[in-house]
Length: 304
Ligand code: ADP
Image 1 (spheres, rainbow, N blue to C red):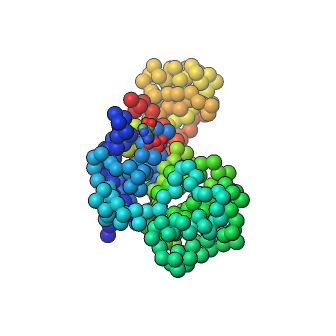
Image 2: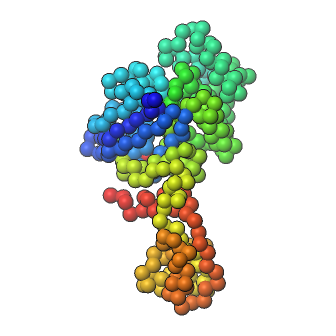
C-alpha cells in the first residue's frame, strides 16, 4: 500500500539559505505525525514542500504514490492544507467559504453542496452556515479551516501550528477533530508545532533542527530511548553538590527541583553519586525522562 506521504532526501533552499537539508520521512495512512522544532528549524518549509507549494531543490516527495514534482495536480487532490495564517474570507459566509474551496478543487455543483453539508454537520457548524466568518470565535474559525481542508476528501491533512492563538478549550477541540479523522476516516495528519505537549499527541514525532531530523519515534520510544534518565537529589546546598558532582565527572545541573544528574541506568549510580557530595543529602529519586528532556537533549548544542 502506498504511504500517505513519502519524503526522500529532500533539500529546500531559499537563495543561499538551506531551510531543509536532507530530510526523509514517511507515514502510513491513518497516522498522525508531528514535526517538532524551534522557530526557523525548517518545519514550515517541509510542510510547504509536501503540500506542493515549494518545489524541493533535491530529493523526491510522493503523496499516496503521486510524485509532487511530476504530478502536482494528482498529489494536491489528496492533500488538505491548513496554513498558519488565517486564509478564510471574513466577510463571506461559512458556506460560501467552503463553496469556493470546493469549486476550486473541481467538485461539481451538486457534489460540492453535498460535501459542504457533510463537513458542516461533522464539525458542528451546520447552524452557523449563513454567518460570516467574522462572527465566529477564533476556535470555530480554525475548525472551519480544518473542515474546509476536508471538503475534497483528502487522505492527508497538513497543518502548520494548528492551535496557535487558540484557548485551551479550542485547542482540545482541534485535537479531538484530528484524532477523529484518523480513527474514523483513516486520514493521515502531518503537523508542525513548537509545543512539546502538542507533539505528544502524535503517533510519530520527528524532531527537526537546522533543517535536519535529529530524532524520531513514537512519544514512548523517544522517551525510553533516551540515555539521559537522571537521579534527582535534594541537598542542603544544591549549588555545592552540583559543583562536587561535576568535578567527580557527572553531568550535574541545578534546577528548581534540586540537582539533576543525568546518566543511563541511574538506579545503579545512587551510592556513587551520594559519595561524591560532601553536603547533606535529604532525598534521592530516579526520574524517567519527559518529552522535554528528549527535546532539549536533542536540540542543545546542535545549533550552527
Ligand atoms: P519553522 O517553520 O521551523 O519556523 P521555516 O521553514 O519557516 O522554519 O524556516 C526555515 C529557515 O528558512 C529559516 O532560516 C527561515 O528564515 C528561512 N525561510 C523561511 N521562509 C523563507 C523565505 N520565503 N525566504 C527566505 N528564507 C526563508
